[in-house]
Amino acid sequence: MEFQQAIQIIEKYVRPQTFPVAVRLIQSDEAVAGKAKQPKQDFGAAMPVCQGIALARRYGWSLAMGQEDMLCPLGSLTLGFVPAKQKILDGEFNIQFWVKDQAVRARMTQNMPRLTYGRFSRILMAPAHRADFEPQVVIFYGNPAQLARFVQSAVYATGEAVSSPSTGGFACGGEITQPFLSDECQLVMTGGGDRAIAQSHDHEAAFAIPASRLESIAQGLEATHKAGMRYPTPSFLLYQAHFPPVFSELMDYLENEEQ
Image (cartoon, rainbow, N blue to C red; front, side, top):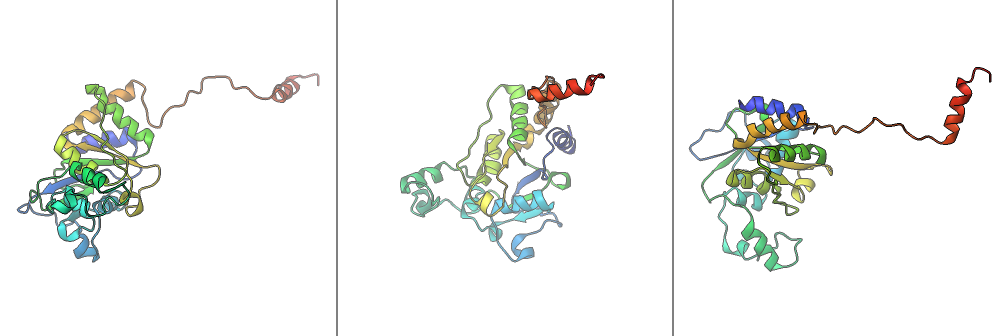
């Protein structure tokens, strides 16, 4: 199944409100597409990865981000653009700032998915229908009912639950690095910077699909749709409602030709 065909099937059955985002990590010797905007160069501002994803899914822009474009150190760490140095691994920096203590920060940092330092030099992001590169991961945002359709479709062929690496923040690690490393779909409850800076809506979360799983998800959506699992979720409407007695009295009055 061609990439665009799979995207069209997914959009047909899930109806996302924003564009699916195709992602590719590239090495230093790979060319960057000419139409891709580079935040520091084109906007005069660095930004977190989640903001770049938001621009791709809401504006329909293609972006290329390297370390010079990165504002969030956690995004740089997960993509391997900077090395994981000891003070961050030990939790000495107050990031994540909202957890209990240094030991918890250290545990979170050490457990975060990270690509090997220097393996890739840039990340490319584009709305899937405009991607002029071969993606490694595709990210969809949606409401719980839409994401449930993705989960059902992933489970359709395997019977295995979909994992969620969510920590309440650091969504880019779950959306990009984890599916890249594991080759498994990820359900990501976005939070932190994704909501405060990238302005994800309260009802939104994300589902990330490795490119190798895209065809099976599309096929799963078609099959589970035929089996009755739908979006929008169909309501059961074949019943007789109960109105207050006065409604029956009014109906009797209107139907009675003698009154």
